[in-house]
Image 1 (tube, rainbow, N blue to C red):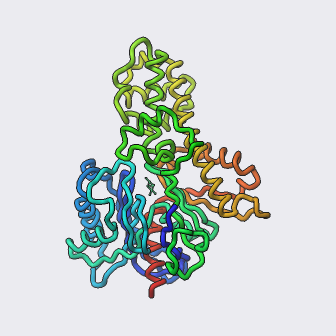
Image 2 (spheres, protein in one colour; image 1 turned 90 degrees about the horizontal axis):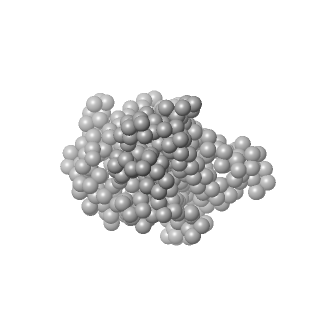
Image 3 (cartoon, protein in one colour; image 1 turned 135 degrees about the vertical axis):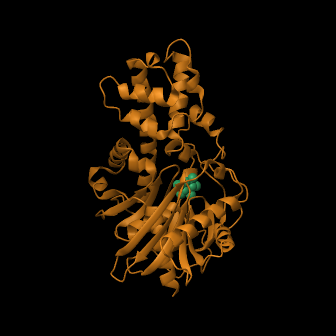
Length: 412
Ligand code: BGC
């Protein structure tokens, strides 16, 4: 649970041109937003998205920041930004950061696939600013934020009921608006405002009651951040496919799922991606032919080994892993809503928006249904009906630009 130092949220009154750089999963983005004089109107929105080249997950941090700065500068030129005056940039950096100001913080650790030297202990804003300087470009990084915070900010711009921001993508996280008086770790005098967004970093949640299995532990050992982020590893898109593969492998070894021998291909770590797994979950064909096809394409299992019975077990495993993720997310979300008094326990339940961004939520239709189902179980149908799980595409990138705007406006 970390104060984000974000005590202003955009309200649609901001105006001007703002850039954002957004990195954290498997892609990074640069965006330009022009906010017009008309309240809430986005006059212009340009965005470029790039897959992070494989070597950048383990190179020195400086190289990664050079890539970001270079992309920002090239992008700005392409869209006719003249550079006569310094442009504000919101930096969405989706890792745990000990934030000391709206535009400063210390990187705590790396997560997901990232394993770069030179990050931990440094200030991401200074690193990006230094990289921008190397390109002699007129940008000033004015806001540093987590993607969950960007998502909430993106939603607040158009929806005053937005109180929680959630990421369900490569990684997972949530943030919410907290009363400053409740934030014990915040240094006195840090803000004059009443509320601040708290980044829960729920990916690193763990508790004796979190049902971590042997399979989870085995997978954990192969990750760059072994021993940490157990919740994220049970929930998010980077890991679900791999958890399912490991269970399927066990069934092949211990219960001859694919016949007397275990197909070697099943032993290849990370071979089953979450998108492929989600297609298996959503296979509605009578014969489970789609499942057999995916097993052939991703794990190279010959069709002769993918009997109906094997496919239906594979599907059951994928379903179980997906449902487990959705149930855990619903439990934490219900806990968060309870904490902020939006669970119906304080009398009349107010309409509440949970803004959600990330590929897992966006592309996996069945997952969204599971999540709604478990939310209803946790909160009861009447309260759950007042909680809108709102999919907000590109919210973290948009929100970063809006926050750059809000921060600029509040300091003028
Ligand atoms: C990071 C969070 C981030 C989440 C979603 C996690 O691995 O620690 O800061 O918000 O992924 O991108």
